[in-house]
Length: 390
Picture 1 (cartoon, rainbow, N blue to C red):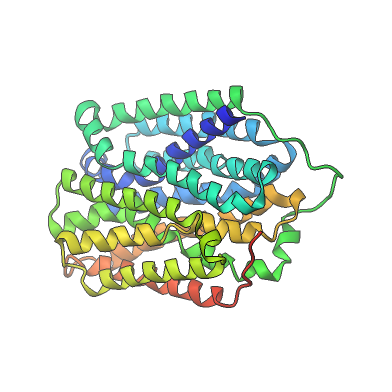
Picture 2: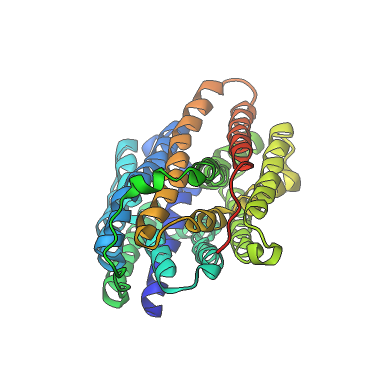
């Protein structure tokens, strides 16, 4: 089982890579395929939306079929196949289709890991284990920054995608070989996602689950590249350095959040405090969009560091799930987190197009403002949530 979990974590490293690599590839795709920022925003949005749509069937599959087949089959066909399609793409439309397939392929891997944790380990350590997985997985964020820039210089973007397709397929095979499914829940209790949706406590957590991740995901996965290119005339190496720094900040944040509920004796106020600091960083970017240098980099890294509360919010929701609905519970939470990010990738793409033509920083001021507004709304609703630890 440990080897199988390690394979799932490797798959999650790939998932983090795929959701963030367009920021670095954007200059090459613009030159070779004529892809605009709006095209790339849509492509990124398709990844998140197909990922999110798959959460409901993935949740049912985890509870009924088990994580081994669910994760290995989808990652092999969607992840490997989507990366191969990306490698031969000749237009922005094909890039969008490839990203949609990759989103399907990546959709089960984190939730399969969480499902196993929820079934085999004490609920007390769920948040810590969840944070460790995302922290390790965030190495994919780092790989999709400066290392990807270096790989593209040697192999080109198409060669790099072929390598990713091969790795994705190999990891899928390893999951199928080494992972073992936990035993089914005794007693045969029945239920569906509708039972979870009838729980009022979850509806006060869902909005922050939806909005906490999207500023970091949107900036790291898409807008850092165009922002630094348009406002600061940054080259690919500089963009790689900034995305690398933000990637490290997100890794650190995920590891840091994990044990804090046990340190402070609360989940709610750890989550609220951390996301409030992320909101302050967004307001700093909104106030000084053209500051440049270390100030802008630190604010962007702050969004990544303090916005890494995804596993802690997942643990907060997990505390309300009955045992026989754990698979559908974690995927329902993930649906809100990833689905909202996909929708907002497309919204910010259109917002960028609508506000372009004036000052170079104007589109990014609009994007920072939108991120800050929705995060503030999520925090306001979350104030009324019930604090619960296992």
